[in-house]
Length: 485
Image (cartoon, rainbow, N blue to C red; front, side, top):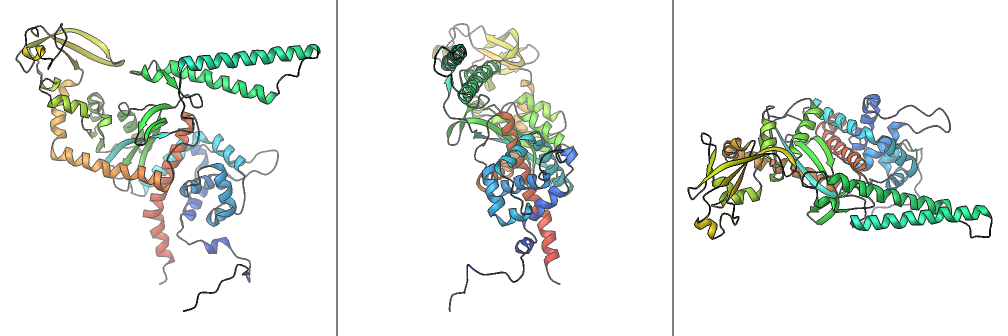
């Protein structure tokens, strides 16, 4: 059979319409419908034209370009500018307007605060479409690097750099004053050099301030030892690919259609304090609570679990491996029996530990802790062999506020319902991270700063939800309409 004939110089008999070249069920048509019906005032995006200067680009064009750009992995303003000139669906979406990268970047920057309301709109559309059933939701996080340089500096290094920059700025001031005297001195550095040095000084000052702030965190002393000068708010975290300097992106995903019902970004490497805030954020986004919620062991905090269940949510979070190892250990805390009547512990060797003192904090966190210590440890074979304690003062056990709730919770966690919930968790939330990273290209944040990272993550999760709406609701309807009788 012969090859099909083709010509790169083929002419159109009539002027073509871009709409004729785009399928009726294409996702770009759904994006156009969403931005055309968006409640601008509620979202908080400026939609009034400027009173002076050249005509403004409509917000439907700029926001539509960003939404569809994130769908096709064009996540930077320069890639968006290129797509507006070369990508056929994008050209149709923008009506053949060609905003440059500066215009697209300014729009994104000025409306960064509107990304959360935009994400909330996508959640509410999914709820109205019946894609969120509130039966089971999973909480998880992923650590992603920021646009900062990976080099971290100690406090002493940053202080020395700041002193050097201050000295250079002082020398510039002295050179400028001598130049004003007109005594033949060389001209002072230009404004661009001075502006660069001032910007460096600002970054160094912010880095020191951020280190001081982290020093007040519970367990944050080690995190305050180093900081990134280019992005002081970013933290050092251990990720799958090694250590990164970035942020921890959090989500809550509903199991029915894997709709993201809550999203946030925190400058913390640990997930331990995020369970309650993320469940509260999910309720704020949807107006309802899920019947069951699950998370991985990084979120385990019996106090937070009890507090969440007091609001009516059934929560399943497995213990961390360290706690499980202690439970398996003969002399782990789990094998010390507490007696309510006498307010004492009994160790596996039958020795008694009595209450000694109470603390209002533990590891810097507000947590009432009662401390019990053994008075009969000297001469015990377990202490002599170093199996239980090596302290001459005897074995010490901490009893926290919700320790009485732990045995009942662990029993429920080990039930068939608990095991099923922990299995369902991974199948609910893990595909989201695969989709955002592999399909949408969200493998790292492109901008520096926590607020910028939040805006980027909100926009990514909104696009994920819109793709789900397009696939499950909008596309089937338009396919049926397009089907001939």
